[in-house]
Structure formats: C-alpha cells, structure tokens
Image: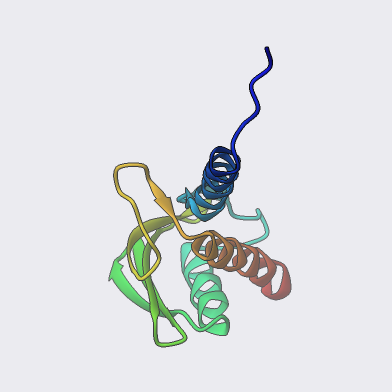
Length: 137
C-alpha cells in the first residue's frame, strides 16, 4: 500500500529544501588572493611597478601605504561599513594581492571563505593595476 505524505510532512520537507538552498546561496566564496601576477616586460623598474599599483589602487578608493621596500599595504572602506586590508608584495617582474583582514564581510578563517564582494573588489583592483601598466608604460 502506498503511503501518502501528510500536509505537515510535505510542508516540513519543502521548508528543509528551501532552507538548504538558502544556506548554500549565503555561503561565502573562497578568499581570492592574486599570487605572482606577471608585470609586463615594458615596465622599466620596480619603482614603476609601485607607482602603477598606487595609482590604480587610489583610483578605486584604496588607501595605500608603504609597509617596507618590497610591500605595500592597501585598505578600503566601502559604505562606511565594510573594511578590507591587503598586502601587496611586489618586484620589477611580479606582484601579489594577499588578504590580511576585513570587517563585516563574514570572513571564516577555518574555511577561508568571505563575502563575494571581497573577491569582486580584489578582481577590480588587479584589473586596474594591469590597465595602469598598459596606460602608462
């Protein structure tokens, strides 16, 4: 004999499926780090690399400080709510953009996940740096 689910059981199953889909949609994305990105060969010096990174970052609202002779630290605050800090080690031939910290972006250190907007901001920064190399050099 075929069993028929009660209305309560059907509603419960529907609720659980909806909840599962919602939780999957809210899950963070893997933190994006740009590692060992090549600098175009037409860029003449390490100081030109630094200049391009600083100009690109500033054009997107990032504040950049020199951490040491090979590393920049960049920070951005979006809508006075979201804070991100990255380090940008660089040389004449390559640079990286590495996550350091954030606020209000649901960063999960254990799973290395973060709100998807973080990855968009890092992708935009990386693209702007590459564009800056093409514009200036």
